[in-house]
Image (cartoon, rainbow, N blue to C red; front, top):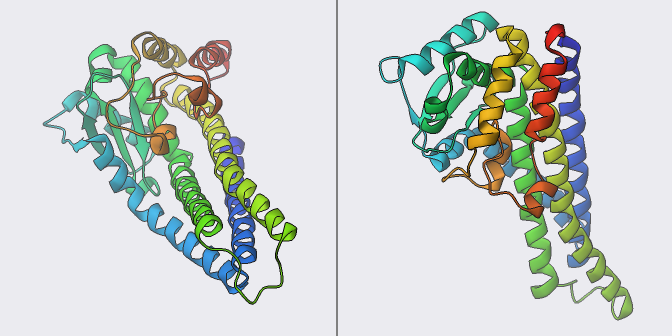
Length: 296
């Protein structure tokens, strides 16, 4: 488990480097289209700056988007005490606790680090879960905090948005701009440049989304394992996941940019959602928990 957590932290560096490479490649395409190589530098600077801003603001945006409200022990004693006990067990700072008024059973964790962590649960999940099942779910979310998945999620979230922003700029350059009048490139050569620019602008956000989904899926498995080790009751989380599979429904207030945060996919099922799913199949997660129950 500890080696897996360390591996997750190392992978964070590679993930960031991969996204920076994608941003760098897009900036080169943008410079080539405009005919000014200084554009490449400014594009990277603006994109990274935008990603950093998103890193610090994403938690607030996520809570506002989901309609979450902060609660105290007096407001939600059952949920608050479960989170409090898990924080003590894991030796983690007590995260802020939020509740979302939504019948869809779901929960998520977010924040920059354990000191700035937030956990949230919908009213739907509070209604259908037993105490042990709810503990398993919240231990999963605290697992994301412990394993620093919340930090990786915010970084990837910001970089994905930055790549989408650059891709949009390239599209606008292709259709409204072009190379400078002093450039000697024209005719068929310029058509090749346009083709490369279009392909890059279309594929880059797709590649970024695929990488984001793959990273998120692996971290869901790890958070499930962390939950089992914390509670010593993998069957509780397996039972909770079965209920999420049976009673799951789309969350009213969410979007694809924050899908990876939830314990279960909050979107309507469909071909595209499956292709870019940020969650492994619930059946697979349940099987892993039960098959490895004696190892936790």
